[in-house]
Image 1: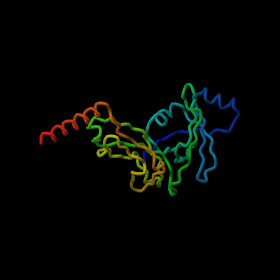
Image 2: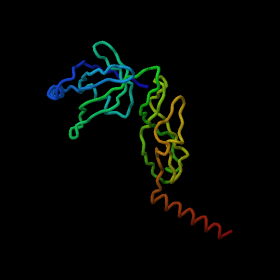
Image 3: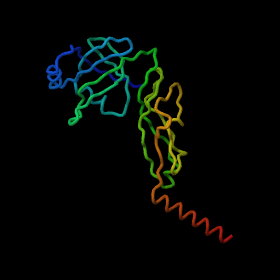
Image 4: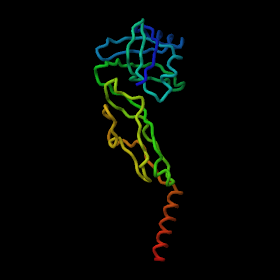
Length: 201
């Protein structure tokens, strides 16, 4: 899995006024915890988060705090309801020797037979939650839609990938090909033509 380097500055847990002052200075308060790691409170420059937060990618975040690096993943992000700026981020420490559960982006490959027949592809789920050892986590998960026909869908339970377990519920719909008016008209025309041909026999 891709890594993302992030520079953090250790901080003490202060009053609300201290947190507000931190945010006015374009600093985002954060906390690192988990895997026998004592809670570490720190802040990061708001600008440094842009390429981490506003992307479909998932990263192992290498946080440098006072010269020590902590591999982690983002667990929870609080956004401002109006500005959508990050207000607080929780990071979970990664143990290379323990399985890790994360959301991985899906990449769709192939040209669906249903789309070629005039249907419309609806992408419903863009990430799958999976569990694997950190070294086995991929950057993306490929889902082949070549055989997906009109009115058909793919659910999580139909998928499998090497060296990882899918945690997303098996009934979760990943994508579907919806029948359009044009496709319905073409199907009706084809059926009518077939019927006429049968009569002439």
